[in-house]
Length: 143
Image 1 (spheres, rainbow, N blue to C red):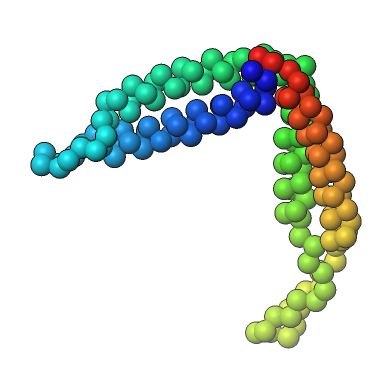
Image 2 (image 1 turned 90 degrees about the horizontal axis):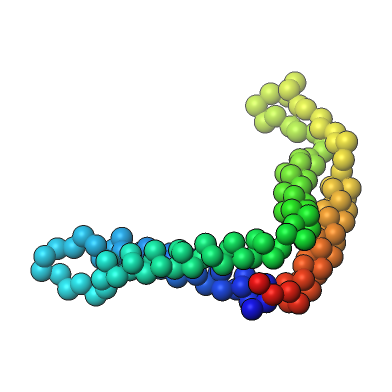
């Protein structure tokens, strides 16, 4: 199985574990005269089995990805950096206080919106390059 296939399987396992957890929570405690559509016990057993499978799969993925972890971490941190850049205020100009004429404030920026947009675009391009490299890795290496 390629790493890419393993990653898809991992996502399916996570989704299925969540689904079984919802079933266990919803159908465990019910009114005595209610029809039990699903078995909470069976769902809980399935959750445990799938969790063990997920642990094994994630371990294999982790070990197989060791040579490219720097790229994985870089993508993650660049995405965080983009969020931070997008959170920087680029408000400029005079803010007029509607209640008092003498309290207007003029805002100036050190980095304008264009500068920050260009920085974000540059980081997104770097992420895309790294992601393409990881895609090749994930589709050509096996666990």
